[in-house]
Image 1 (spheres, rainbow, N blue to C red):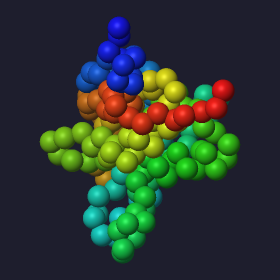
Image 2 (image 1 turned 90 degrees about the vertical axis):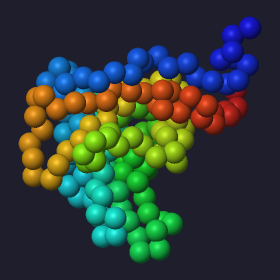
Image 3 (image 1 turned 30 degrees about the vertical axis):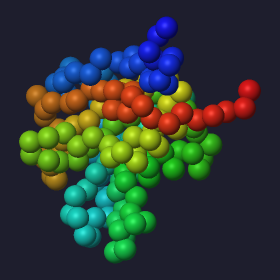
Length: 165
């Protein structure tokens, strides 16, 4: 018996790897650029840690979002959820790729646990996620590194949606 069937584990379809920005295809670069632009609109009065995200729907439309903080912190919204909520509010619930952009000098900033589960809600199949860094007012270099991963790599035991047949 396959362990993936027994545990509900979703087997990643995408191999996680590090790539140079220059080696990415144009649609992926476009997605990353949309996330960078959204990062520039982040409302981060308390953490001063802007994050941008973008998701491509099945029809190629891109929805982007930034993190939005609140003084009471609980209603703070991450960039990934902002982007996906914008899409869902316009009737889009299936996505083919996502990008997340933030800046930590020595690390990639992957989605938080809540966002991973939220992305999983709209990922009946494994979707690629491109994670990269972007400093304010610094143009993306062709030699910058991008973590090419997927939602099933980041959340192998995520809750699954139970849908009526």
